[in-house]
Image: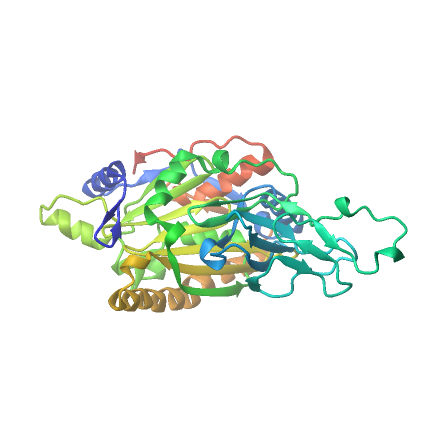
Amino acid sequence: MTTGTAVGVDDDVTQRIVDHLTKRTKDVADADLEVPVDHFLNPARLGAELALMKRLPLVVAHRCELPEPGDFVTRSILGTSLLIARRSDGSVVAYRNMCRHRGGQVELAARGSRPTFVCKYHGWSYDRDSGALKHVPQAEVFGSLDVKCRSLVEFPAAERYGLVFVTLTAGASASLDEYLGTEVDAQIAPWALERSVLVHEQTFSLAANWKLIVDGTVDSLHPPYLHPETVAKLVYAQVAVFSRYGRHGRLYQPRRRLQTLLEAGEPPPSSTKYLSSIMMLYPNSLLASAPDHVEFWTVWPSVDNPAQSTIHIRLYARPEILTPEMRARIQRSWDILVPVQQTEDWPMEVTIQQNAAANPGGSFLFGRGEISAQHLHRQLKEDLDGVPYVSASSTVPR
């Protein structure tokens, strides 16, 4: 659902926001949450998180990167060299980019289109659609070679909303339908990401644990203090609604213009023009809504350093609204987003990481009013420690 160039929001969410604005309250969790500082420092904890992430469907690409049959992209995801291709029938497939002979990459290019992948080391070639080994030069030098057992290693892959999800465990049976659920489908579908185009893209490295970056992105309290001249002038941070959808969740906050509308006695439209939101696709993807376009974040932990992360940010927009004026508006958003992150959010997260290293036995406090920031840590606790996710979806006002 769209309203002009803006995207619609659930009516019940709008009503909850209006109720909170009237009462100056927000959604809160049942209890405060203490998170050990060790979770941001310990290599063993990082290893457990990486193992978990490799069992989950992760967003690794968008369909605009491989729009036609035969197209492919390569990238390193959590230490795995990945080759993602679009088959002749239009489906996506993901392989370990590793020759079954001596381990070389079978595709060195970052992107392209071809029917066959050939390892430059010894010329072994593989079919794009099936991953089957097609040709072995000088096959007679091998005593015994069963070609059928030497296909590329395939990972479970699926496409939804134009996003390509890959599970980095060969043979895993993770169901994308079960993992996302119908509620997440309903939240993301209105953005029409499957036909959106890439407007901006950049990758950043940061000396901070990946969870600190996610924490900062979904934190509902900090804008008046860390962003007084930018975000705080656009979003009313004292009010927040959080909706949990299984492992995933979405934070909503009113834009200042909604408060102005209510003060004028106008009925509140259910639209991203008046509500800001950030959707967390657990564990490491974030969809932040502007009125007319999407910021899509993926936050990747380092595989060997708990204090290092990579952040990939893309801006997507529906092609039918990409007038020159809209492109200029999105450019202005980008020109605000990047400096705010580089001069305010990320430096703060680096200092938190440094303080954590100096105080490894301590803990960080996530208060009841920080329900959106609690969510990631509660879900990780359930998945890694086997402790049930105690309600972090309470709508008790405060």
